[in-house]
Amino acid sequence: MSDNFLCHIENNILMITLNRPDRLNALTEQAINEFIGILDRADQDDEVKAIIVTGTGRGFCAGADLEKGGDTFADNETPEEDYRDSGGRISLRIYEMKKPMIAAINGPAVGVGITMTLPMDIRIASTNAKMGFVFTRRGIAPEACSGWFLPRVVGISKAAEWTLTGRILSAQEALNGGLVSQVVSPEDLLPAALSIAAEIVENTSSISVALTRQLMWRMLGADHPIESHKVESKMIQWLGGQNDAKEGVSSFLEKRPANFTMKTSSDMPPFYPWWK
Image (tube, rainbow, N blue to C red; front, side, top):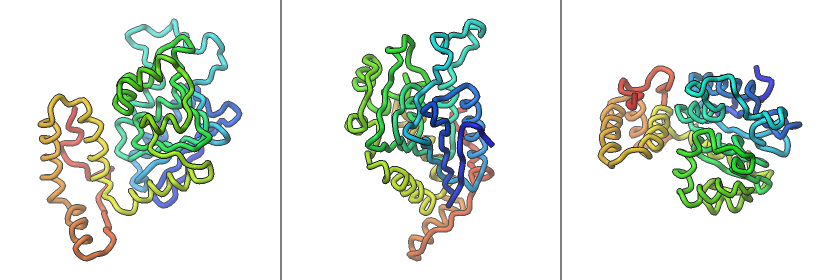
């Protein structure tokens, strides 16, 4: 149970809804810890094959809760070498996920409210959405690993423009800049997210999705395509001998839906995680 989130699983899709509408779903330290706990459990739950994150009310997430006023970001007690920003803890947990994640951005998403979506795999937005990397306007710096994620998602020039100015972006500008892949009407937002999630759930192997998700992200930092070739070769060789590959080919030849049975909780390859 969570005080700050609503969670519902249906048709192998976990819907995580930020639920502090009176604060535009702004995140507190407690909420961040709850979110990470939800993700931990979802990653181990074989019933969950895709995850959608959205917000209650008119906002997606207004970033960090500013109820402490000017001292919101102050921490003079934690030693410098031990301090880790809370948004970064969320982003790193999402980055490690085996399950694909879709952000359905229904309204304002600023600060950590937008940076935490960067390691999610797909972002779609309502026409009501507004986004802002507003850190320079608050006298702080980008967080949640956005210095790594944002240039990779939208390119360095656009990332610099958006973070240096700290201005608010419309959903259309976010689409034009590659931050989101679709902009839809408010009433079509969740149906669009559910349609993408269902496409994954109904047609793909959970093992294949988990490996593909990590391949795409990890290779962004590789210095030569040979690194991707090496990992892909491991994947193809191992997957080729597994039940899901046999089922995938057989179902295609027999013109029927596939019934993939391998589980990410117990059936990941022995070389996973290959980066550690």
